[in-house]
Amino acid sequence: MELNIALLKGDGIGPEIVDSAAAVLEKTAGIYGHKISFAPYPIGGCAIDERGTPLPQETVEGCLASDSVLLGAVGGPKWDGLAGDVRPEKALLGIRSALGLYTNLRPAKLYPALRSASPLKDGIVGEGFDLLIVRELTGGIYFGDRGYREGKYGTEAFDTEAYSVTEIERIGRVAFEAAMKRSKRLCSIDKANVLESSRLWRKTMHGLSEQYPDVQYSDMFVDNAAMQLVRDPGQFDVIVTSNMFGDILSDEASQITGSIGMLASASLGASKRGLYEPIHGSAPDIAGQNKANPIAAILSGAMMLRYSFNLIREAEAIEEAVNKVLDAGFRTADLMGTEKGVPLTCTEMTEKILEAI
Image (cartoon, rainbow, N blue to C red):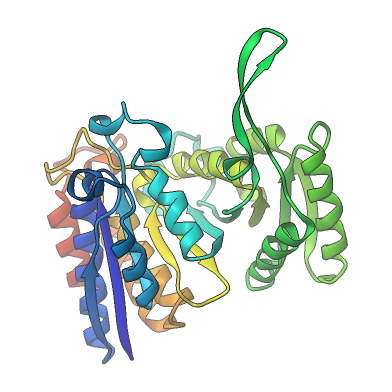
């Protein structure tokens, strides 16, 4: 198989971790007899500096012409003073929309070897947990009407949350299908006691659940879900929720795994082409210092092999290599927890994983 991958390295630690993921993908492809090629394109702050826009048209066209896309991270203090419509982060919404990506899959897994790095007590995490957050990606308050108006207390800003039955059913089916491939448990998160959009979300999800009688379905309010994630994360298997709630809950879930540097994500649409990225930010405080944890980007590459190319053996080879390296006690600085020793650099961790494939 020939794999043509667009690389969006972005800002901060983005170039370091994308290079690591590309190296792992290249070795894995070679072992299993595939040809792989990479084409880099600018995005985010570096694109602003080079092209005057966070998402150049050449980047959009390059991604659309690729088989799939690997993204690092965007943003940093250098561009914090820019207006909202030209900030680096605007590129993320733009590329997701351009590629028609309405689903975000965010696994949150606590590896037994990293139990000491989790902020939760051993009695809570047990032998670890493994859950999947399915986040709606192109609707809701992030894409709703917004602006300024005169209100009761003078000038006020507003952002509108809106969802259609079609959007809810579309993401709901993805979640139910994911649950069918796991332990057949799905929890839908909303705020139906307050928000009209959540009431429609819940009604639609209930109707959809009748088509999946084998799935144990439940609802939960988002404030309770935030509490339950730190109280008993093992109770969840697949979670489905809206754009904003998913954004918040997936970041919370990342922290209880021990490090945000461990978590990959996949953004998918109707086609096989996806956008794969670690969920952490650009970490400008350690950019260029070879301190970044490359594992989230590497695991994002594994997700690409699984979801865009159906290369299950190849994806598992990368995931097993990561497991082996962690079980052997190798850590980057963010994974040290209470452990003693010298942490590996980004390059050294990448080399260990390459050796383990």
